[in-house]
Image 1 (cartoon, rainbow, N blue to C red):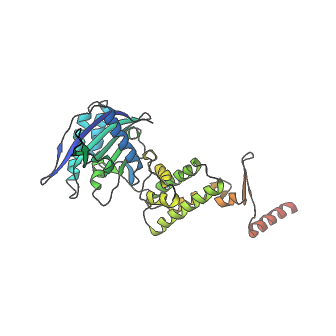
Image 2: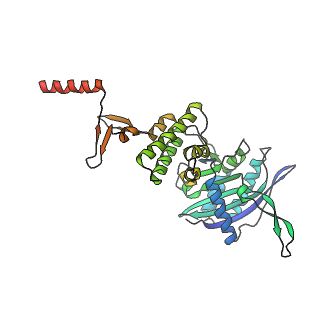
Image 3: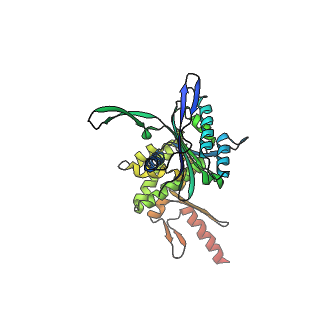
Length: 338
């Protein structure tokens, strides 16, 4: 999959004793090998970061400044990127001024498409001091963008926003409350929905197990261990961190699982308290009709206590409890006597 760049711009958020100011760069940079490489690297790094939260523009009161600016940009055919990013910089400077520990930096904006969907990526990047060799083989100082070191980044799924999806904004949470100004800058509402977040995680874990082509016993063991880890977080009311989950579940290759859990297109929220009732679906099957309801553990299938016949679309239950068996025998005996 390729990131097709539409527009790129870089501006500066400048911190001084009097507060934060804005230094605007070019309205849009040329799309070349360098800008393509930077966008691709930022996309890759943002995707791999585990500490992400997802949400949507705040629905209370008037639309936030970023939503209003984005709406004007889209309605104008996406042509005036300079106006969009300049307006967003003013909002960013304002929100940064509310946080004493906030820092300045280069603010990187990229409007790109991926699989025919439009995205806006925003990241704050700082310079890093390095060394370079001259043609005369002398060593001299050089400054370069510390792309790998960015702490604040967010992505708006513009197509998802236009089609009223439930979640279309994602951003790095960071530590402490300093990152809150970046959330406020994006105008993102991140109401915690433990049941939905848990259900999304359960679906992702099951899909991962399938993609790894695990044997039935290995898949059952994987999902059971995942449930135990998540249960532990739920019982202690501790937020579940994807990095820790991947390290414990896949100790020899945690990145394999982490790449799935951090995929920004899945919109999985990191750092929530799992819902124990929903976690049961990791190892339990449940169904209900107007005439009956059924629930059984996954181990009942692997252990032969419940047998599924896909051709006849039937389930066979074995080792019925004695009281149920006796009740059924009496029921059928009564029917025979009539």
